[in-house]
Length: 111
Image 1 (tube, rainbow, N blue to C red):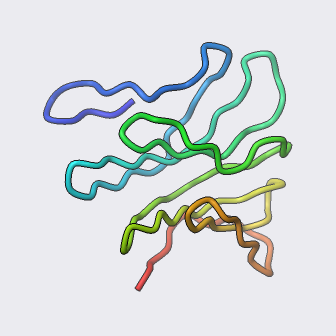
Image 2: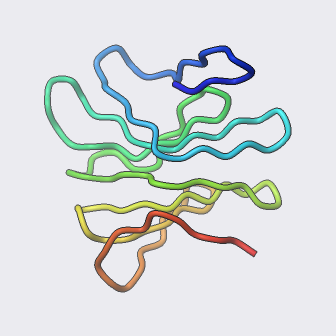
Image 3: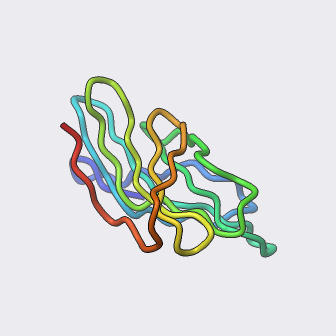
């Protein structure tokens, strides 16, 4: 959830999942939030982002995939994150790109 103009906005997530928000970006009237969902019955983390509270799955089926930061430039959605615990990645409009080293990505800049 996040607050907009003093009002709580809930992010959509299946009742069978828990969700965590890790980054937020606002452009005009659109609010983008990134994070992850995990099944309440166990299993891995799924990297997701929400645009105006609607879920967009970036990667599911991995043991661990997490989105950590988000921004929008020229109508393209950029999301930083990681998969398999220590493999840094980023997504551009939902297409994942792996980085060559191990580590965590917590922020980025797009020009």
